[in-house]
Image 1 (tube, protein in one colour):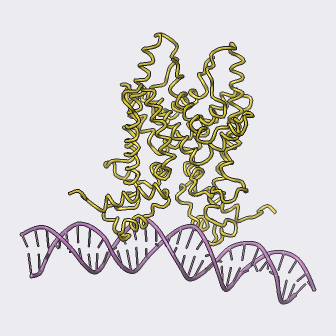
Image 2 (image 1 turned 90 degrees about the vertical axis):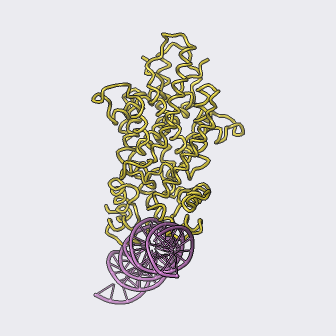
Image 3 (image 1 turned 135 degrees about the vertical axis):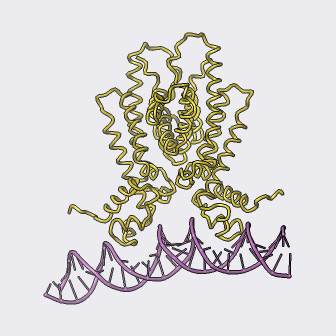
Length: 224
Length: 224
DNA sequence: GGCGGCAGTAGACACTGTCTAAACCTTCGC
DNA sequence: GCGAAGGTTTAGACAGTGTCTACTGCCGCC
């Protein structure tokens, strides 16, 4: 009863391990089969195509990310703190598990093409995560406005969904560009300002500074 | 005299055309050679490996993008308007030439690995573009502060380089996620607010709304 | 006890990127 | 003008890939 459909799970397990340790480029169909101890034709019984297997692996990545989101969002904390924690988790996950993160958004490797409109499509995995963020932003704004004098400025804030989309995109872009190497280069070239080399912040500090700045930018000033 | 090193250029030309029309997945070494009318071993005389050829193609993409930046940044316009124009150009380029944009940031296809520290590395192509933006942000802030009453709030703005990195990442993330399909899904699910379907904004409008909001968020309120 | 069907195997096929040896073609020295 | 030299390009081999198909075990079931 417990091994269920053994090989199917085992292939995905092997794929997850492989992409974590060796990167997305090593996820050959034959390589996965080899490491699972079966012949190269075996996966075909469970996954009609290579892309289908990769999609199943990527799906595990989204599930993992969702679990980390839930763990980071301590419901007793104020919404703003939760949003910050989630933001850090997102960037941290992308950089810690580069291969998996890359796979998750490589549309050319996933059979997301609209050939069958049914089935649990992969893109929709991000929807619940998105809605969690929208709820947090809404709550955050409500609490902020309650503590503030009413009838103040509040010059036409964008709707929460737009703010969340902007925030998400920003974190995603940071993760991509940082992994690609462009941001390090670019942040190291400019703002030295004559500081002694010894006290100059390291790359990890720069990244954290950037993430913090982005969070503040999208959620409004920390205010008081 | 004019054809110079004919085949080298021709291979890159063919690759650019191919990636524009068929996507990054169709950039096989043999396919490029085929379309250039030479045998599959010919490219090797000019590009030691497949990755080297792809890197040359991607380099053209960065040059193209830089030219569009320059064209969009009308020096007589205020810096803020220039920044907005550049931002729109970036997202527009990414969505209009998906294949090229994908290739440009596919580190696994480009031989950007630090095996030789010389040579024009691909990542550094983004540096002049970045510096252009830093200059514009600096000028924008200077003009804004000059028109404003001094000694005002201005609660600890991040340095220009950080603001530019944040803005760039945001545009990049929007382009990625929009191309991936997640943002459409997510922006269509939430903010209908009971508007009649006929007047509901189309996807292109939603994207433009998002880009505008992001620009405002990072550059500060349009103020007056 | 033979039988059906499922799980997995093994080989073929077309294709890929890399490498090597052979042919080609231009250009220079005599 | 001719022959040798050089850099270009070709064609084939090689290992590897994803897909497809025929085949083999093996299990439970009537």
